[in-house]
Length: 471
Image (tube, rainbow, N blue to C red; front, side, top):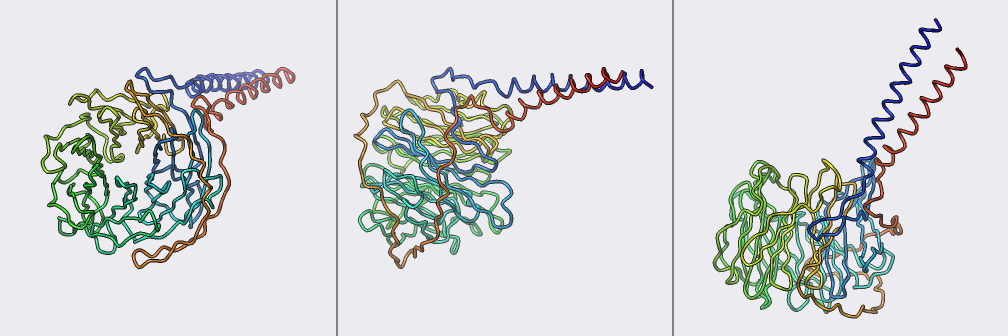
């Protein structure tokens, strides 16, 4: 009996030891720090991690050298009536200052942010709107709202006109029509909407709406149309413009046909207009087109990322720097890519997220241009970790304005108007989240992997000592 039992203990002791060694090797990979980017981008910084799902990160940069980040987070295991948290944090160089968390019912799939003349603005789920001044405090009560607007399809979007006024573009879920609407910066009331038009395709609904303004006030709209009743697949991408504040719109220009979606539009120097979009899974690839005469005629489409795979991983995000160069950021096949258009030539796409998390799901990165020469990018991995990286371009930038010392805004009940009819809803304040973390810090699963080898080795030693005492 004793030799047999002793061999059995020895056998299981070896198994435990080998398991500990294997997990130790795995933990080395998980714990290794993220390497700095060789292409000028900073080492990605982990600014948030949670047990739940991160969605729809959004970034805006102001004229004071600060960057404002927003994202949706829904914790695991919330039951039949989940709540989602809208996180806000501000980068006051060189550190992130966590300012606010507020809570919203439901599971909104989208969130858009913008800086208008009267402060920061948020739109999520297509129909919930909140705003604050440029210097919000540490409480959710510093934000007005959220106000309930017209029931829209979720991919409604915000844009700011040259006069600083905030605009919204959306597809109305009640009529399947496209609208634009201005928020009066003096009265803070949404003015009556202007009809852009009906869907071009019969039995379709418009969503994925985006809006941009030229310096002369010309409005540029893009959208996707999706087949009803399922809202899938996409059956066309379109562009239209207005030169009279949305009162009338030009004939629509077709950007792409079926199986292409998630468009975006920005403007550049002079009358330049740039659009980008993506293909669904199977079609893949990322596309770009430009107009140099304010959207009247278009150049030849360019495939910016031509590798197969990918799919609907979010609209390509674009920005134009102080030198007039176009920058694009998008996710594809597990990487966040950056490419730029300089002297009419696209650079080879560079992966900004290499080394952050092996085999992680990565989608919907957000980019903002600050002070004319700073690119800021936010992206999530596996919907659990949120990362930030930036690039300072080798061009002259803008001098940041002196930090404003504005009074902290207080929540006010919005004035009810005929269109839309805002309504005040509860806005509980859950207090600030945990402080930002560096990318070299391990996550929850990394910590578990690091502790597991110690536990296994301790068990193995205990087994051998017990065996020696008994035999």
